[in-house]
Length: 255
Image (tube, rainbow, N blue to C red; front, side, top):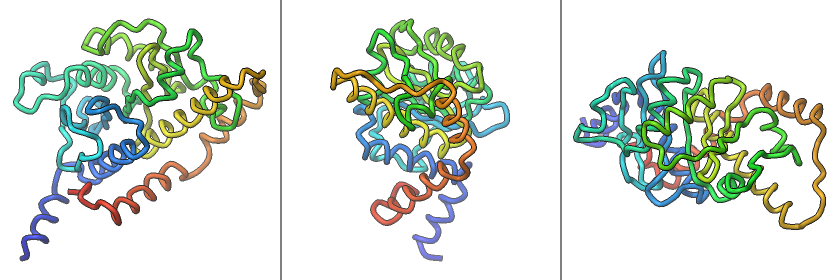
């Protein structure tokens, strides 16, 4: 057997290999979109039924370099996690660990300090109004945390997790901080994060004009949000296309 084939077999036998590939793709594409922040920010994906075991990026590794095999497998109920030799970032453990312990429907969690979502999080009113189709997607489906308490160590993580108990709420605008998005899969969550940043950008730039906003009615905004939720396969196709591009341009992400 050739070395290349042996290496491929070893990789595909990694626990949760396909999930790792999806996450690695999301990390690298987030870097391409400049939605990351240096070697900070974290994504995680639950891999067992109750969500307590999850994959997450290693500590202080740039999103653009993360490979499938780099991802840590973490137990949210293991109090010794931070004392191990391959410990995650303490703020990642505090925030993501709390969410995976307390919010079972949050299978995937993505937290970034992307520019426009963070500008939104810095406004006195950080609610995203439904001024276009993209922002309408999040009507009644995002929550604003207006009580920033410092870095997301365990106490702050526990507090934030309590804001996501309503399964309808998929986005938390973290006041004075950034944005956190949850979903069922990597594809679902990444797609939502992408569109929230686009919607926030449209809103912020609309505010720049200083002119009155054309805000959709609650009825139409809710209709558009429900229609998007029922739109089949778009998120999965989005991630599939991104993986196809990476397969051509930087296939090392699968390693």
